[in-house]
Every structure is written in C-alpha cells, then in structure tokens.
Amino acid sequence: MRDGDVFSLMDGWGPEKVVCVSDRRTGMKGVLVLDNTARGMGKGGTRMSPTLTVIEVARLARTMTWKWAAVDLFHGGAKAGILGDPHGEDKEAVLRAFARALANEVPREYVFGLDMGLSERDAAIMADELGDRGAAVGLPRALGGLPYDELGVTGYGVAEAADAAAGNIGTGLAGARVVVQGFGAVGTAAVRRFDALGAVVVGISTAQGCVYDRDGLDVAALLKLHAEAGDACVHEYGGVRPADGLLHLDADVLVPAAREDVIDEDVARGTTARLVVEGANMPTTPAARELLFARGIAVVPDFIANAGGVVAAAHSMTARNSPFTPDPGLIFAMISEKLRANTVTVLEDSRRRGTTTHAAALAMAQARVRTAMELRGHPAPDEAGTEHHPALRGAPA
Image (cartoon, rainbow, N blue to C red; front, side, top):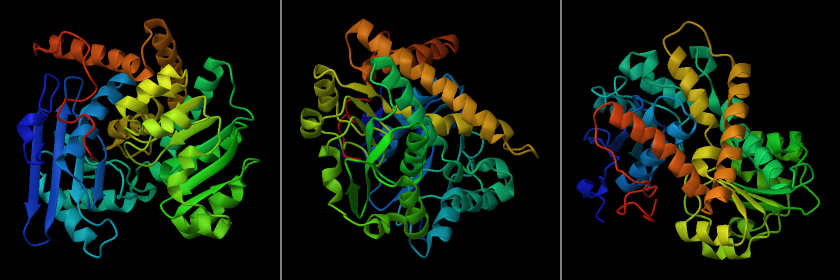
C-alpha cells in the first residue's frame, strides 16, 4: 500500500479521521490518526521519528483502541507522529509548528502524550504553544503534571503483568531468568520492578548492544550507568554483545520492550522462554504468535501488558486542568490491579477458547467497543475480526 493511500486504511472500526499536516517554514510533517472514539475522545501518545509513516501511526492508533477498551477506561484510540529527528537542533520549532497545525483538534478531540522520541519537556512545549495546560499529558512535575518516564508507570505494569502470568502458568517469577530488549523508559522501569519481585535479570539491550550474564546482571549498577550514559551504559558495564542477538539468548521470560515486529518466526521457533511479555507495541508478528501458541509458550499481549501508561494517562486526563497533582501511589495501585486481572483473564480465555492470547484479548476489547458503537447508533462489525485492517497487517513500522 502506498503511504498516501489513506482510504485503504479504513474498515468497520476506523479510523474516523486522519489529519496530515505540514509547515513550510520549519519543514515539519506530521499526522494525527483518530481511530475509534465510541468509548471517548481520542487519546494516545505522540512520537517523533525520522522513519515515521502514516501506516505506522494508523497501526498504533488501532492498538490504542483495543488498549483503552481492554483496560476498560473511557477514551478512544488515537496516535500522532512527527516525521523528523528527535535529537535535531530545530526540534522545538517543529514541535510548536505541529501543535499549531493541530489546534482545531487539540485538546477537543485529542490530547498530546509521550511516545518514542518525545520527553516531558516536549509535552510542556506543545502545551505552551497552544496556551492550554490541558493540551498535553506527561507534563513535568513542576508544571503540575505526572512525569511518566520518571515514575516508570509502563515498565512497572509490564513486570506486574509478568508476575501475574508466571503465577497463572505455574512457574512463578521469583528466580526466573528475564531478558529485556530495550533499556529506555519502559525497559529500565521494568527491570527495576522485576528485580524487586525476585526475578533474575540476565540480559538487557540498548541501540548500542546488549549485555548478558546467565547468573544475573547487577541491576543497580546498570540503572546507575543508564542514568549517567544512556544507551552507552552497555559499554560502561562491559562484555557488550551485538544487540540483535539478545532475543535468542537463554531465558525463562522474554520481554520485547523496544520496537515493532522484532519477534519473528525464527525467534519464536528457537526461544527457550516459557513466557513472553510484550512491553513494546506490536513486537510479535502474527506468524510468530501462532508458533509460540503451538509451542505452549504463554504470551501477554501488548495492549494488556503495557497498559500502565494509559492508566496513568487516564488519571492525568481527569486532573489536567486541576490545580492538584495526581497521586502516584493511587496510580501504581490501579495499574497493578487492572493489569494483573486482565492478564489472568486473557490467559484463561485463551486456554478455554483454544486460541492465542492475542485473539482472546482482542475478542474482549472488540466486544466493548462494539457495544459502545451500537449504543451510539453506529454500525459495528458483527463478528470478532482481526487486530488490524488488512492494509495494515504486517506493514513495516
């Protein structure tokens, strides 16, 4: 599919609106996809990448539709993205141009959030450009926001989901060897929580390589090095290996927490893990899901495992024009409760139906979205369908 062929992205679920914007002065190019708002206004993160495509953003917006429904919070699926270098010197000007270009949609139909390439300071810039603190969530604490990256809400939820899943399949997490691909905001928070839950983190990777020790890594040292050196922490730690080999290393629990489509048939066929917990969005290809299911390897789907961020976002959305900062303790408790319960429900539904956990989770989410659409008088697909429109399935992200 050509990236500009927007009509071919549409099916019975959405997207309802695709807004492509540009700015001649800064060279900004961006897109907002509102996928399905039957359960509430569109909400999903905003990313910045030099390889961004409309297909990528549409896939992510659809995943957000299912994520909000699965966690049973009342927002709709949406996603936004900017084509550009998140480390470029002109980043602030590009962000301000992007915010201005979407002034008709933000914050009435969509609220900016944080995703790959954007930070809490970037959220503050976009909110400032529109003169509305409610235009973005993930603002710095100094502006009354809830700093997602600092708190590590998504990674915390990934580890909580893993603990619930390990208990459900009878292996337990204490002493389990865990490999985490990606050591950014999600990966570092997940590793911290895995360590606290008694798991043994044996491997992590960044864009610059990976480190692995079958007997366990020094988590405290790695976290300290990451705070000081970022992705280069693997070099500072020592014993660095090529990053692309991490998913093939021996482990009990595999956590892809970086990019889309990294667990392919080769990884699914060879992994020693008995549990895969999807910290990233769409990290496993459809063919790999089927292979993992056939091998009896439990998988906690992305929109179940990494929903901690949307739970936090829901609190921020409620409090975005309030003078009070949301209570982190309350948010962590809700993340644990919702993600643990959803994880067990999906694993048990998968066994009962004889289907993959993705199919079980999708059926649950689609049923909730379908009910909302019908109550609003909107036709919805009659049968449980696929996760993504055919034009998006397996598309490069």
